[in-house]
Picture 1 (tube, rainbow, N blue to C red):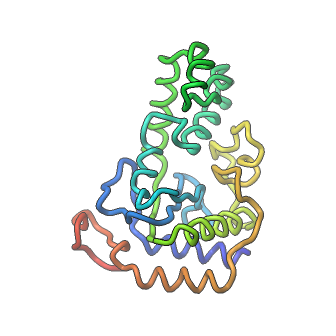
Picture 2: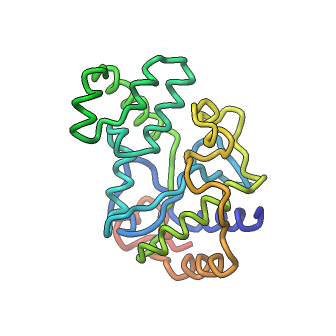
Length: 229
């Protein structure tokens, strides 16, 4: 799986690297995104630490915005980063942070137990962490079933690769979730299942070659101009 994992990292290097907050027009409307974190390396490049997509039609940009918005109940990535930050500092607020307040029923039940001011402070810390240390690439995949299948296969390929180990300083090592600590990914689902097949690798290779519009680089490439890799 090391060769397949190296391929994914090489493929990611062909796409424009974004930071949060990002320019929406530079992101495909539908697709898959791969996240990197400062200080994490693998296969001679930046290590992928998260893989994601979206379920709604043409909602990739909206999904990515949720990672940069102060509502951890809309982003499992935000929730997991917050959990790691709280556990790192032995903060008892971890128990409250783990509560999901999305539904009205949950808000009625758990809302009075949560210090909203303290929660906002943690949300700000998570946003700061994401904006300072995370970056990502995004590539288009229009078909929903194909997106979810590729996402699953990429996650599995990353999780079984011996060359993709987290650094000793990686924040995820502080996570209360053993699957995050052990996998080196901000994920608990889809680990160590079916990796990418040769056909899927060929598909991704062809996709990367065909979608030059999303491989623009340089500060002047916000619309349709830029330098192609």
